[in-house]
Length: 225
Image 1 (cartoon, one colour):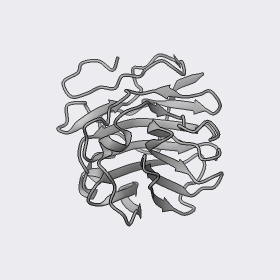
Image 2: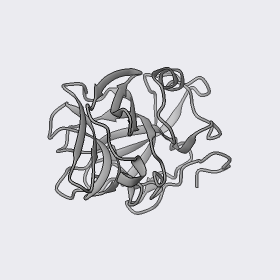
Image 3: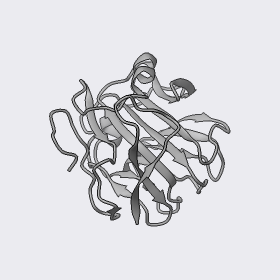
Image 4: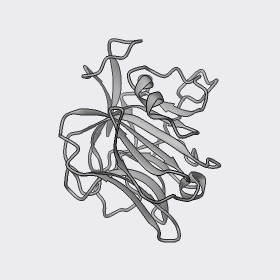
């Protein structure tokens, strides 16, 4: 089961002294986000606070798309190497990898900036740690059609993510380093310009099934569900 639990995080949000996160315990623990949320986007930024509690084989805290065309974040094999990747239906694979970048039981703010002009850029705690050297196709053409998952890889042979996640946001544009740094310690309201989706898990039920959709707060919405 997927559990939302109260934790004392090492980062302090300006609007709250405590908050909830999504705890994912491995096999069969995952949550469905909004499918096709990247549809029509030419570029995007995906950011979240993430904690690894174990290194599972190519486990992904989040993924968008299918096994034949997707965008995801994972650790390489069972290592602490972190990589942002885009896998195109043509077979082209773009990777931005940061070696030995993750320690277990530590919270990190990770921002994936994906654009046709700049390729893949991965920021940790507001600092650029990895970048691909190639441009890619538009985001919507890679991962605009298909499932969006927290904790689950499109490939069955890959492991499930073991850890926790909080304040997952999707923006419809490539965020600048300054925007990433200025916003990472703030709780988003859901009304920010360019915010495509928000999941802060504060209003989720204690148990979330594998197939139950989690509907994020989009601009102008009044509920997470």
